[in-house]
Image (cartoon, rainbow, N blue to C red):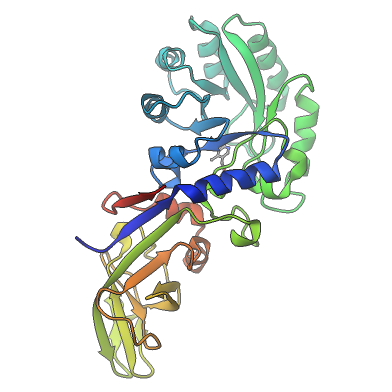
Length: 354
Ligand SMILES: *Cc1c(COP(=O)(O)O)cnc(C)c1O
């Protein structure tokens, strides 16, 4: 067995959910577990997040997996359904659905559910991705409100710029104009939860912060009092001593300027580690912070262990986790923590810690 493992902490999930409730103490929480719970494993994450008020997923298959595992929470389909046939499953599995365009509206109005539905009516408040345009919104709301198929309508939007100061001001103007006060609202993702308190409303929709990564580039997860849920761990499978002028890895991208001890780590881009991580990306070997060297290959990467004499074959390596924030690896690689967490591949075994 290669030494690579993704450790998942249920305690950290519960801690981060508690932090969501501290940031948005007046709101109910829809824990977003799409994309296999941001790469953590849907059912792994659901266990740690069972104290949530609701879950949100993308595909009906994910909702069914949660129901089959015994979760009775409300489950929201974040993009709604993709064909009229899926209305049957919504009814059968008691799912809540987003209505974001005319076809979805028609499917809801023309279905015959045994139990009237709860729908989230999505407004495009400026992101121009999903949602009704402001001039269509009132009419859609009226049709849903008058339908015997619908027991409750929650008004919803998603912000394009919740991670920037004042980034929700324009969208909130549209929200105030288009959303009648008498309906519950769901507006805020993680970035809005941590820094746009005026957007919290009735139901918040945290994703990334539940997994202990930052939603805001300028603020670290630890400064937001979040704990990393995933520790991607591996080990050294070889040690090289190279002389000044010698290089490491494909393309010889790193050349030593002095004698250098190099640890070869059992982790590469086929495990989900970013190939674009340059020399200098943070990594921890034998519990000590150091840097990567040269190009990441499919199954291996190299770490500088010149100052870690105790590092030997078999020494533990943290790719990201408590010691090396995933956001720091992401920043060095020109991406965000979201992408790295989602990208851990199927060949990496998971170990769940209760
Ligand atoms: C993914 C998603 C969220 C969660 O976003 P984070 O930035 O991870 O908190 C919330 N709402 C919608 C509609 C989403 O698609």
